[in-house]
Each structure stands twice: as C-alpha cells, then as structure tokens.
Length: 209
Ligand code: SF4
Ligand code: SF4
Image 1: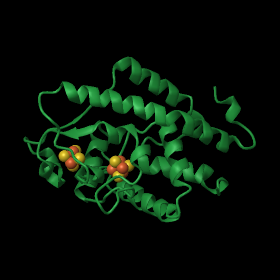
Image 2: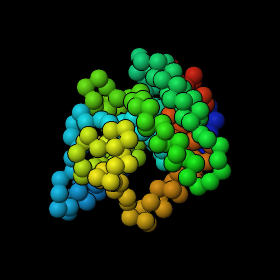
Image 3: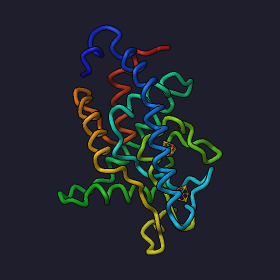
Image 4: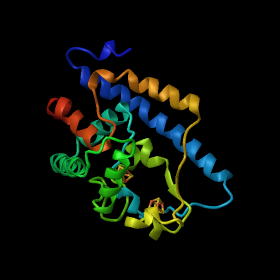
C-alpha cells in the first residue's frame, strides 16, 4: 500500500498525500462529533480559550496523524524550539513512570504528568490550539459537561468531574487502526510528543521547505 512512498522523495510524496487526505478525514470526524453532541440533553462546558485539558500527555495518536502534523509544523519558524519543548515533555513523562508492571502503570504516569500542569507546546498564549486544524483526533474527542474548574489538576478525579470522550463507531475505529497499521514500518510511538520526536528524527532534516 505504501510502495509508492519508498525511495527518493518518498517523504515529500507521503506528505503531499496526507495533506490532500487528512483535512477531509478531520472534516468527517468533526461532523460526527458535532452530530453526537447535538443529540445530548446538555451543552458541553468547553469553549474557545478554555485549555486546562491541553496539559494532558496526549496519547493514542495514529501514525498518519503524526506524519501529517509534522509536515505542518516543520515549515514554521518556531519548529526547532517546538522540538525542544516536545523533548522536555517526553523526558518528563519518562521520569514519572513508577516501574510497577501492572495495567494501570501508564494511567498513573499520565495522572502524575497532568498534575505537573505543563501545557502542550502547541498551546498559544490566548489558550487556543496553535495547530487547531491539524490537531489529532485524541484532542478532538475530549469534552466536559462539568465546570472547567473541574478539569484542572487534581479536580480531574473529583466525583463531580464529567470529562468524556466521543468514540467513533467500532467499524470505523477498526478501519482507522488498519490504516495506522500500514505505517508500522515507521515504528512511531502513539504519544503525540514522542511520536512527533520520532518523525523529526526520521524526516525532520530532509525537509527544508
Ligand atoms: S475539557 Fe475542560 S478544560 Fe478542556 S475545553 Fe472542555 S471544559 Fe475546558
Ligand atoms: S495539540 Fe492543540 S488541542 Fe491538542 S493538546 Fe496541544 S494545544 Fe491542546
């Protein structure tokens, strides 16, 4: 499937294909999310500039999302400083693992990370996402029905917190996972920060446009 993206110029061709495809994918995804939200009896508490949730360590990002987002950020003048910021966050997250081998190990590290209140490197000063059109689905699916103050720090485990995710139907999730598996050769981590660092390591230096 990815044969045409091998050899010389492969990254540029891949980037062009993702630039053509991903805006449509996200448009469909956003339409689905909007339709689901419209069926609910309450409005979500989320609004432009509200951004406590942008201190999460973003996970479950598909490889094609990482490659697409990297293609967008790679051309920005602040790219080198963004890479450094991604690196600091990935390093911090790695120090927060407690080494206990059980199913909740990652959740504990994610919670510890969230308590550090380290905003995403793409969060702009006005509280808005600096890569809004290219942000991954993990960011697009996260909402709250409770007051934004309950999204902050330890309040995320308050019984009154009503954060929730809008999941896609299982068959579509399976299709997206299959599409992701086609990118296995790149061995990209599922976390936003580590994933982008790996893409940078593999392709960052090849694209100076
Ligand atoms: S999830 Fe919470 S912090 Fe994020 S936008 Fe919604 S209300 Fe604000
Ligand atoms: S990519 Fe954007 S929406 Fe996602 S955590 Fe970062 S600033 Fe927030």
